[in-house]
Image (cartoon, rainbow, N blue to C red; front, side):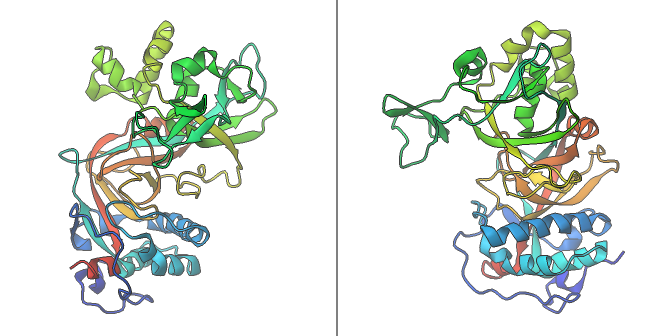
Length: 396
């Protein structure tokens, strides 16, 4: 393994086959003071990440998507247009050796430590794509539906938001010529959407349905053995309230011990309390079908590319720019088979529970094994965003 290249130390010379890009325009959004430049050799584990080629592949998928529709710049000021040079090179040259990938990212980017804006340290959790048995029709066993987006669910923005509506709501419902809050979880599960033909699949367990909502996607195995994939289409608009926090407040599970596995265990032992707990989360998710083109990749997520297990990260979409490489160092995390966790990730998804500058959700993959990994990730972490060099040169 090679150490940090000369470009890491800012000498401005060629690194591998890529030359240091020059600034062309002033950024539209200034870089946030939460981004503090450091050297690559100050990132714990940067030179030891041997799986970086997988991260480069994920980055290249975002580069292809960028040709179709550029990403929106987040409030941290990592300008989407500044990725153009790195994206072009990633599309042109697949890389398989970790040292070549390191040199690639060192040539086009400079690292910045991300200062947490809402907690003492950064924090990571995990998510995955559940794989569940399902049916296209209601049966005695399969009784709990996943819903398509209803036709009376409307996007809400500054141009149509009622003055008395909570600014958090991005969706609402047309009612008597005006927009009101959409039905919440308790209302929908109580029959508010019954008889409208919105059920796209049926599952055997309401807790499985809920966790599909939490993950935002699922791979469904139908009775004939075929696989269908569903992914997020919209939501009711209400705030997310996690069952783990509710159970901790009720004294059922210590907050520091909350994991997906323990939540599921509580519901197995207390099936009569499922609705009581889950209805406190008013948020409700609607789905659409998505192709299963490559079983080795995850679902197409918010950045409009398929997620890569162990290399895609969900971030706060208001702050971050999709496609940004983010190195995560979590000293106590060993759920991925090595400790400490020190990996280059690519920002390719978001989630309503993922808020803050140094907050991430690590995509663990698909199926039960991935769920076992994702369910126990709750760890402090340090975040380093790789910022396109022109932006830092324009923001001395």
